[in-house]
Length: 458
Image (cartoon, rainbow, N blue to C red; front, top):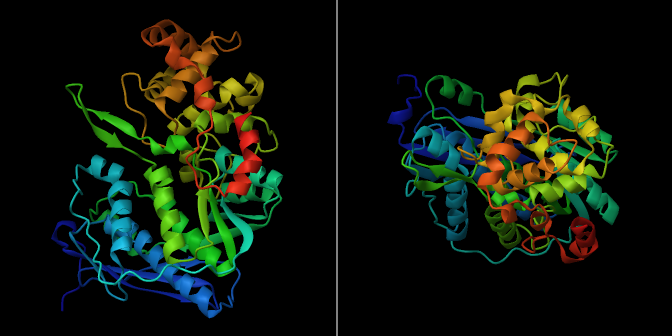
């Protein structure tokens, strides 16, 4: 038989072959394939082995492992997006199939838009199993696995949980030295989970696979949920604010709105609520998945972060530098990407100017070369960037606030906003105070929220 070759447009089937976990080593193996091609094996390694699981927790871990297998498959499925999806080693019910279809369709929204693909009606997971009985409570201990990405948001969550007396382990996936250094600076217990993608994926990319953004937070959430069951803890905590639920409005050449694409859909409320409910129905009734910052806007998060200076020299929200530096974190801010632009703008109303310029390394708002980047944040003659940044109205309100302050108003981009953009906008829509109001849509445990609400509102 001739050797199988990856030919994107000839592929008809994506197969979830099997998944397995070795409790002695802590290694999970997730296996996929296209058509009758070679097996694609991804591994996830959870520190703490060997794991001694009773029957109930072993069953819950099995359910969480299958979810991880199915969600992580998006990294491989996207290479060819075939219409036929098969699950070979186990069956899923209609509830799980519907959840996965939502995750794949919306989580691949930016990927589909950039590649000119229409995935609506194409993604169908086979539902063959009958709905099972609701998952029981496992008696998980009160402890939070808190995802850290090295940026301001997770640090706000970590300090809020610390202040509320919640036991926590700072957790991340992969080998970033930037994240590891930031996690170490918290002084809390840490957990670094390993994830190794199947090596063939990079060869498939070279051979013309479809490529682009995937719902990384969905994958990371499934990994942490699996780890939580193994470790016997009852909370998986992320730090996604309410602004993450809003995408980029796509405008056609004729000026009409053609749709919305949310780069950070798996950081939004729709995903959080769907996954949290699924985990409690299928894995453990006492496993809580939530974002501690969901009630807050990006500006409200920035206000909270500005109150603590201990991380000024350690945090970074710059995605570009995480990609470029790899194992050599010599600089935390590139100063030219959308994340750098937005973090600078969001912190400026709440932080002394010398402190902010010292963190980023220069004054981004006094650099005319950065005009286009900030215009995109403002949604002025452009749509919001495909990045994890706040809403356009937040950026406009922050810029309007700076335009009233003597230390900022003469900087090139602030002065331009005051002269050119601000007069075109309704002053009532530029007030920052309404954007700092706390929202009631969240999954935070009631007792914890009662403790934190006053802090977050002030």
